[in-house]
Length: 168
Image 1 (cartoon, rainbow, N blue to C red):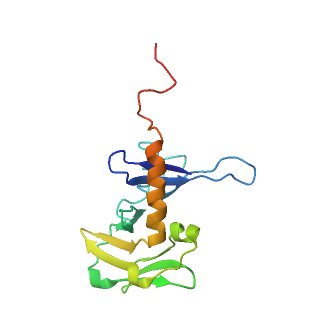
Image 2: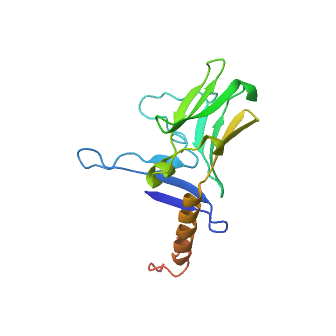
């Protein structure tokens, strides 16, 4: 796992995971929080296929008090969307009444702490063709994040000038 934090605010910018394959090679990074990396900034890969830029883009961006997901390029009005909790599969389900969009996603932070999903903590808004889904963080998560921030204060940042390498 690798995490990137804003130095001033302490806000989590990116969290990504990489697991080894069955043969022991490192796999691709799976982004849990933050912007998905732009595919190839100029290189389209061996297939030369590019995703349509009008497709919905799903990403997670947390705030201090909420887990937050943003789905860009969804042009329908707010009353078309249904956002609910599926307790059986431990996930959040987003669907439209016109059956043009459907998405299920879990909250890995709650799974790691083995906490239940609460439908009353879930809310959503729609603005500028973006659906913003918020889930209020439970107290246990807030306490764990506060302890993590205390630990991060002790760690030197990558930009600190007293590193081991000296340039000549």
